Image (cartoon, rainbow, N blue to C red; front, side):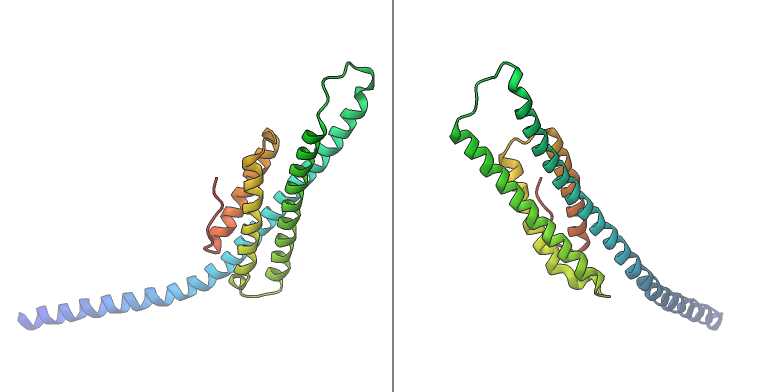
Length: 177
């Protein structure tokens, strides 16, 4: 009876070892599938960020055109008090600061896309993501200290969320809210 119990114990131990070995091998197969899936997910996140930058830039361009049209169409209407030159200069400086920051972000996302497409190991583009996040921090500061309205805030929230998702994929600190 003791021999039979010992035999059963040995068989159970061998079964456990065999099960663990099979799990570790199947895990290695899953890792390769996960790596391919991760690269595809990162590619989608990059496209999402690129599209967000383009939408934000297009909105700001249209907003500028609409402001010029509105200023030109006030000729027949009663005019309100006009802004002082100091106010105009300040508004122009804020607009330029946001435009410069957005241009930097656009360049860094384009650089990330080019380098990502050219490599098989997507994690090698981590430094480009870090640069992109730094450019995003500049926009975050500009948006936080200025009052640009609800639409720019909404567009920035969407873009910032996409950038934060991409940053998490690379294990890079996300942007603050």
